Length: 61
Image 1 (cartoon, rainbow, N blue to C red):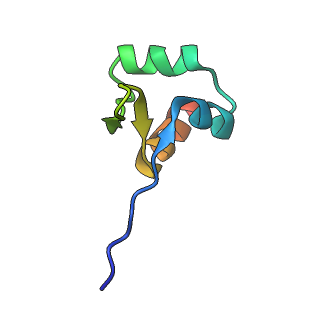
Image 2: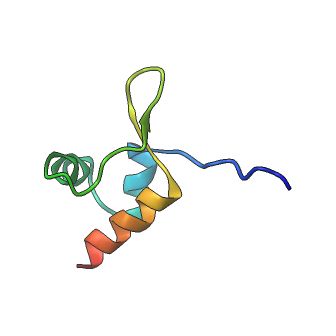
């Protein structure tokens, strides 16, 4: 059985996919609603498909 590789999104790509802003993502992170899955080599926050789904739920609510 093959391993499923994870897709990681940058903050910029996440904002484009969800039509939100970096400021909103910063706010959700500060409030503990949405935490990045990992940080890349440059220290930038990255998010997975699961994080994308969680962000969509946050935006709907």
